[in-house]
Amino acid sequence: MGEQREGWRQAWAGGRPAVHIGNVADFNAQFFAPDMDARQAERRRRQGHHYASMALCYSPEPAVVLLPHHVEEAWIGLLAAELEWGRVELHSGLATSADTGLTMADALRGRPALLERIAGSGHAVLPWGLTDGLDGLAGDGAALAVTRRYESKAASHALFTALAPDHPGVLVPRQEHPDTPRRAARRIAARAARGVTTVLKAPHGVGGYGTVVVTPRRVAEAGGARALLRRLAAEEVLAPGGGLLLEEYVPGAGRLRDLTFDAVVGPDGAVHPVGVGVMAVDGTTYQGVTVGPRLVPPEPAQTVRSFGLAVGRALAAEGYRGWFDVDFVTDRLLRPAPTEINLRLTGPAVAFVLRSRLDEVRGPGHLVRTLDGLPLGARISQQTLFEHVEAVRARCRRLGVSVLPLVPTASYEELPSVGLALAARDGDSLDAAEALVRSANHALAGLFEALSD
Image (tube, one colour):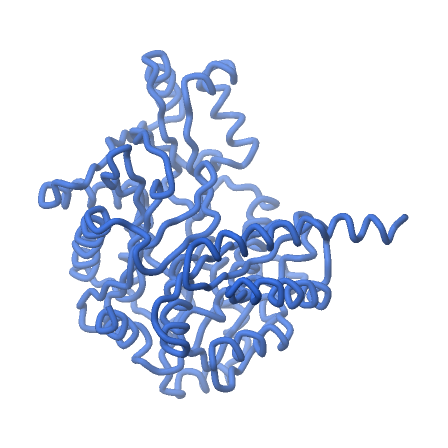
């Protein structure tokens, strides 16, 4: 495992400190449906800019970090102490502006001296994902074209279908592509009438957005398939007018229901495995992941790994370079079914990076769990959140668990949240620490209610 880990680290950042660009919102905006209204697009842009705080952990050793929202230096100091980083040069607040359409690419173009210094630094430049506007810093036209092609859930499904005959342990769910909303509704209604559950997918989506599981009961309760589609668009579960894919639902349940395989395609096109993780998914919404040794039994882990490497080789042959993952659901026999490819960094990528760094500085054997959007019981400033996290860290330390902040900027949103990573040597300690953190976050509501009395 040490050789594999070193292999991907060398391929990813040359084994050296790197420049991290938090361009999550820019990447996601490439795939917004044409009819998405401006208010929804702005909400999703803000969510992406918050999630970009995870750029602090894109690689084991950051040298320069570029973030859209303002982040207090104290957060960097906390992570640097835990992960034994050297000096990290932070540029934050780059895309916080009254201009709601401001992107990280826009912000960087407005800082030519900074761009020139980064380009000449000799550091690898690691964005969340490839977009226009990163010319000369990261990626090329071929890699961007492959990214845009296979981020499509239809194109990724076609690739899965082509590869599956060489991987008999892998199930590929059937997928239909109705060419109009009316035909999609008719197909959903016909499937529901037969008692069949359907997974509806927008061609593009992140974190579960654009994907929903529709049972026959749900269709009936909505008053029919057409009414259900209108409701899902109104609730911003599906994008209006963005096309729709219908996919076979794979029944399954349990701790190993949602798996992910991560790997890096190096500059020479070689594919370097990073690992298999166990995701936490609420419905179809990604919540976090746990990575580390002995989490997944050998047989499904090897099946997922083998298929993921085959996907990586296909992507590399078309010109892709960089991080990618393949997500799976498992059936009741733990047979994996691939659901999508992410040609970018992801929440699990950050967990794998943290695990690698902790194993390096503290010795092997770490389990890492990321919890990307833990609800807070009250809206609080970054300073108050820092004090809260420090108190939680002290309590978790007594359990043998380290707490690492990942997303500290969303604590004053309408639905306040914080992203954290937990690291320990065993799963029971992680479970106990997660329960403690959730309870402490919820208790913030009582604290502020008491102050207002």
